[in-house]
Length: 253
Figure (cartoon, rainbow, N blue to C red):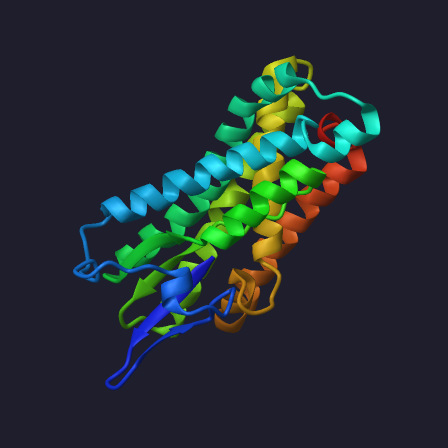
């Protein structure tokens, strides 16, 4: 997700915030960090926020898909710690390939247009995600967003928004083919490649819904054709997973 920060003559305001929170609550910006860095550059604050978000999402997804959560324990009477440990590296790689790549694609595209751009975590969203996964096994991922500051034309703004889900779709297409034609009958690697595909498709499809403040709305406003290509591709691939059922059964049965 992308959030644009604009500096006004008399006041400062965040536009398109997913949570409608004040900057202090949502996007902490240390003094002296609003300078445009070199393409690919990161601040210490940004790296810290990224690492925390990845760690929390990894634990949350592990609790969900390894069925080591309170709800499963109440229904089945036990949980498997070995299953948690087995799935954690899979969840970590899946989160890095989906969430990390998604946010960095936004960031690098913004930096391409000489805009200040950094990721900021959403602490409340991360806490809710962790507790919801631990208690119920449901995943609600609201880790934060990439924000950028500077003057961007409408087309550039749309390209920045499209970069995240676009990267997810590319990864999903590659892993979709690898899963069904290379790793289908290989236990661990099939599970890993399949999970990467699933998480990338879920993230891309959700973010491409054409409603504010999601990426899909920004892409749709700037290019309806680009939005249609991206959204239809993600929906078709996700639909293919549901129709076959082979991949989804590994996580939801």
